[in-house]
Image (cartoon, rainbow, N blue to C red):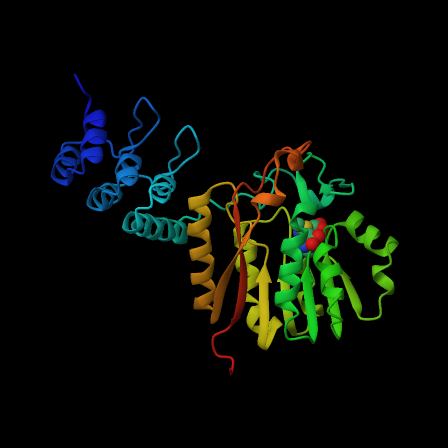
Length: 328
Ligand SMILES: C[S@@+](CC[C@H](N)C(=O)[O-])C[C@H]1O[C@@H](n2cnc3c(N)ncnc32)[C@H](O)[C@@H]1O
């Protein structure tokens, strides 16, 4: 005989919202996983049964449960192009993350938050900067993205701030725009030493500030362009940096950040792109997300020797943020 969970999956597949509600009322578990590792919400999402999706979410079905292939209900809805279902699930994700913030509490590129990266050794090679755990701090495949970020934040010229030097890719690109001043904050001692060794301290328009951005805020001015790309930090740190934008960004200035939020899952990434845009809007900034295809620069060989693939999506969405109140 079918269990209640199996009956719920079947009703979800059939789009039978009355049956779904009856089963839930009689105690069926909305977070049930069937023998294929799929939840009722995933079944409903695959087929775009929006009423069922709403009923299941109201009954506490987890929006972020993953199938054995690491797909969430939202990924299934996106794969089959069910727009209304996608919107309902995105909204559920945003609401849940606003309150709980469970997904992106992990560090940006490492996938875990153990240990203090800033106290550990790093190693440099031509195509990557690695931490002591063989996780990539920065990789050369991001060079075209860094060039695009530099172009965005330098579009008004003037004084530019970059947070996080890494391999210096974005800073090399910023230099090409000849900014009046170019301030770089870097917190890792070995990265800082390498900056000095490679002549960054001798450039006329460059000011290097060694330390965590959180600790050197009092040394900062206000800037025409700001780029933010740290490592080993939480989404909360990015959020905290955003709280300082009204002081750091001049009227009419451009802000951008490395948008690696949930780079391992297409749907979670969509949710976080919405969430960060919403949070920036609440602070008075508009966010434009410019799609840049990255599939071609990301073959399997790129990840050889790297313990964690921090990016697995085909498209990168480059954020360009500006004050909503700035004059045209
Ligand atoms: C992903 S890399 C930056 C890559 C850089 N955008 C590029 O184009 O090469 C991150 C850098 O931020 C530095 N970092 C990490 N936490 C920081 C913090 N709290 N303040 C300043 N720099 C930090 C790391 O040491 C690392 O060099």
